[in-house]
Length: 212
Image (cartoon, rainbow, N blue to C red):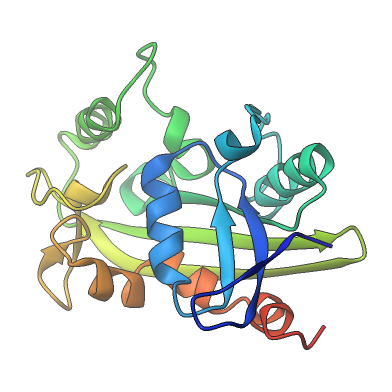
């Protein structure tokens, strides 16, 4: 299933739909998977505008809900993910609710960061945290693969870097002493939760190579 298109090198490429309306996420996933012979497309290229309710009990269930919805709407193989930041001092918050954490209507990424820092105010540092990402590759109902990625770090009360989105500017990775927003694209995609999740999707690698 999927539309096949000629690649730059004359090989056949397969089209995969990214189940997200977030341009930053699309660009990041595209960079992570640039080595594969596939063509990634946005929902907007198909005239799709879906807002899938994330009612799952974990990252995998939410990613699967989005993959199923976009597959049913498009008939194309779909890549989806659900991610979140879990802060130890807050008992794992914001977690599954990371994108909807701020009570402010129409909250921006900056608003969510500010709200998280307000919740941590007065608690002892370091504010240990872990970024999680669960990726799903949905070819058809009977052919689905998934993978989980994570990276440990800490939340800091200083905004640093402009290369990321979400909570990236306040998430410090101690091993490199940089926030994920300070990392270059190549380095971030090697060590980030999303990079680790998507590069571990064995089904995607096999399918793109025609091994399925």
